[in-house]
Length: 349
Ligand SMILES: [Zn+2]
Ligand SMILES: [Zn+2]
Image (cartoon, rainbow, N blue to C red; front, side, top):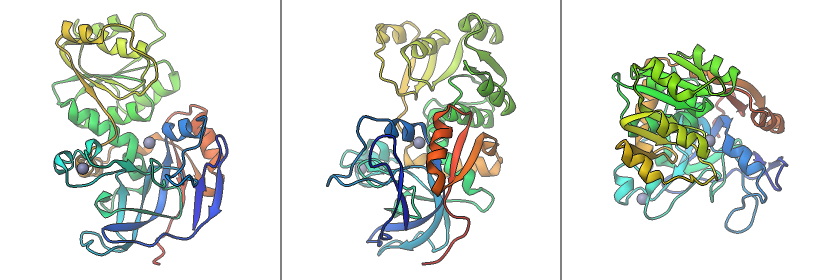
């Protein structure tokens, strides 16, 4: 099978390798689509390429959707040819947190696609069968790939911050996670204020139904938020950038008892006393790290039943052979998501 590797930083290589064979409790997935993530670009530009435990090169990518091509012993909930997306964090499945559906907090072992384990940008990918999430017929693979990571983070923000139709939700950063948060918050009936510095992203947010779009370069963001919200801050804030400045902005646009989902992962230190900032407004600060497996099924059902416009977030498609161009498009800061098309038809093994 074809598989995409990043043997050294900044270089991608397609190799022909043996198709893995399936073991007990596992499923082999024929990959149809894999989207490119900001995390892929960070790893591609890192000082060192990520390797497997034995030091060998790792297949890249963690945002796949495709067909069940083979199942191992004991797997009864999947059928061959079934359309699925993959929840990308693998865990023990049986500890305190796994039993609650928070596999991302597993106490025993955590790894995942392109994380101490091969990624998925290949013709086939081998996964724990419990991580295959069935797709309804009317949900395309293009959209399903977007739900694996950006959509997953967004449903986690919405769920962990308990967004309802009564809420005004401020979203700082309108990249794929911010835009997905917008689509889901609108599906829950919330009013959404989107904040970004990029006019193209703001225009896309407007197109996706954002109630108020604010360019952070235009004047005082806090007073702009107050102007559109009767002098109050936001009920929920999604911080999707990860800079110290935007984390402070998240606190600044909060009201009393706001729930802030911190989803942006940066390297800067928050140089204020963050506890003091949170105490002052009795803010609930919630760390958002990947997608607990329990949120995938409800998200897939919500997106399919309301036909949410995730497809409008797709920027471009590239075949696997042009993965370098796909990475370059994503790295250019294009709006929305870039997809790698790996297969259009299920081919039984
Ligand atoms: Zn991702
Ligand atoms: Zn566990």
